[in-house]
Image (cartoon, rainbow, N blue to C red):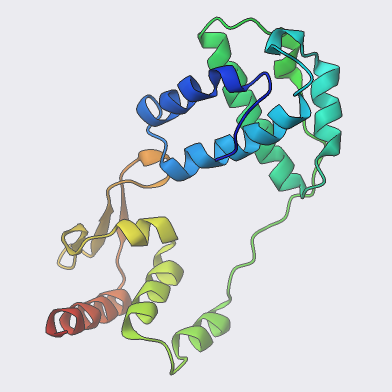
Length: 196
């Protein structure tokens, strides 16, 4: 995590605790906030307190970020969440800081594999049974990598054809349906895991 030395550092520790305890944020999320706020903090190091910072100062720092528009938006979102937290905690700062907007960015749609590409990947002979099971889950169900990492066998209900995700995005549980092809590969992988 970035070491903050500027006007944000005084409140970052309590904000981190707030994210973990009140919002249920993961360590990865808190670390990402730390990195983003560290970039803002470095740009504002000449100020002793946040109350000295103006909207113009934030715009100046924002203009120095040489990043993809999506990364800039994430940094801006991190700062806005931090400022909203400080507002709740009655920390003095210029209210206009919350009005900072990001430059208009290009809205890219994510690239997804078409059916042919997915079949080529899954039929690749060098994949281990574990990797094939993970790819099948990713492609067929839309499950996230972090959700796969957290799965236990008791979360997979073959008879009900569903997977119980205990802690999905935002810490929320959800149910993911299992299709027959996923059930076959998961049962094969489970049997191989028990035998090993």
